[in-house]
Image (cartoon, rainbow, N blue to C red; front, side, top):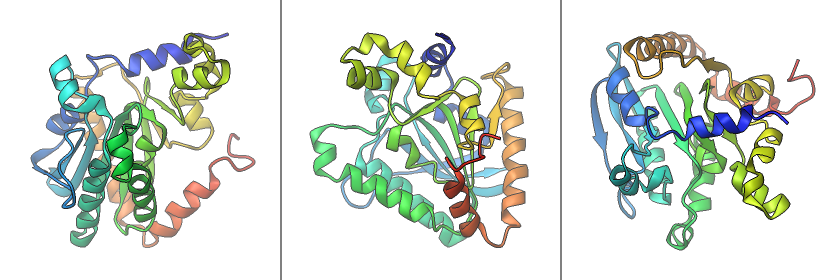
Amino acid sequence: MSQVPYTRVKLSRDNARPTGIDYIQQIFQGFLEFHGDRRFGDDPAMVGGIARLNGMPVTVIAIEKGHTAKERSFRNFGAPHPEGYRKALRLMKQAEKFGRPIICLVDTSGAYCGIGAEERGQGQAIAENLQEMSTLCVPIISIVIGEGGSGGALALAMADQVWMLENAVYSVISPEGCASILWKDAAKAEAAAASLKLTAEDAKILGVVERIIPEQNLGKSAFYDHIRELLAQEIGTLSRNPDLVSQRYDRFRRIGSDGVAG
């Protein structure tokens, strides 16, 4: 059985891998962060605000893991609480009000599953994001930059275009969680990863993502410059589309249908 899928999982989790804030600092100009969901509090795992992309106002939202142990603890290891998703939705609806395109950077093993998060409506917060994002009338591009885990990732990926980095992964569950359920043994994560079709190539074949971004210059100026230009070009194309909502609906209806892999 191929070891490549689980190797990708480990690469997507590498502490040295650029996180959402790295992308924001390198790709966008004049980022101004907003805080809070106006209901409960602020979630450091979800970073969002307004910025400029080649001079164009945009809203940027990123799930942030951090690099060091201290940063990762503060960011809850990139596992957002309900207030994080509600903050993201607040910023997206604000973006629609002012006609700003939305760019989401996804990097999470999944939404936080603690008791407090469930008490504050974790499932409802994710569901509301999916419902509301499906009807937003501004362009939305989501990029899976590391881990794209379960509904916690999908809650920022109901987009017109979903892209993945070459060594990112996108899956309904982590390989360890899958192995624990199927075989009662998390050590079989490698076998689970091979079955989950979680690599960028798998997602592209299945129609889950539109673009795979190479990583040979990961973290270098040329890498960020390339993504900046791709975003600018695609937002320009999407902005000229008079029927984004219907096409976004059709995009997700096509996933998993017969003939997608061809």
